[in-house]
Length: 297
Image (spheres, helix red, strand yellow):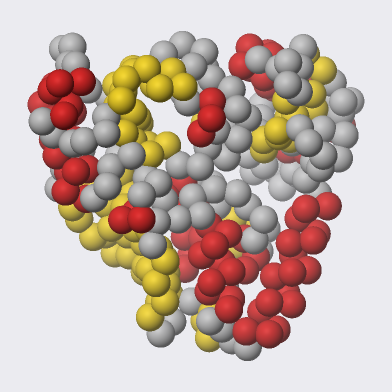
């Protein structure tokens, strides 16, 4: 069913049509959103979700775009971006950290550390919003975000607001059971620790992580999950001799082969072709099929 802007305005202010999504993604690539909104409140969000359900309109949630490749075709339906303060707050209450889905994970970590709360400092340097980090259970070899979750506040597709306890959520390797709901906020329970020591640890981890990631001016993005074999995806790509491999304006990083860098002339097609080439060559050499961690719309 087709719906126009006049109908949206009855539900929520600020819905726009044919909005370029490239400016909201790390790679600065991609086409248009059919409809796009940055709701100002949960009331607006609930009204939008109910209208989408009634009219069978697809809903897409856009975080900070750090793990997203948007294709050049129009993204049909309503794209929702949690950028307003109602969805980006961070509050510390004892050992609890309450963070909105739109808050940046890095800001949650630094504020927690400054208040003497440890546990998630290992995640420093991982880009993304709280919502996206929960959905994909962001983590490192030493742990993940899901292990610190006490509860998650969500909206379902019918516009109902629910609070899920940790026992009601499954967290796996770079995955969670939160795919069918819209994350609004989470409560983490962290461990009290010395803020000075935590800050030192966080700084060391930040330096190490930055050294492992591509530097320079080019946009870059982490592409594949590490396979269950225990070998990193980057090592497998290097083993296949693909460091520095180029298709158009998309290049496999020389520093960490699990990153693709995109030059100013790079296109979505370049990135997609390079991803397929990596998967094919790695499978030929290692007999392992790499699975994307990168989300594609």
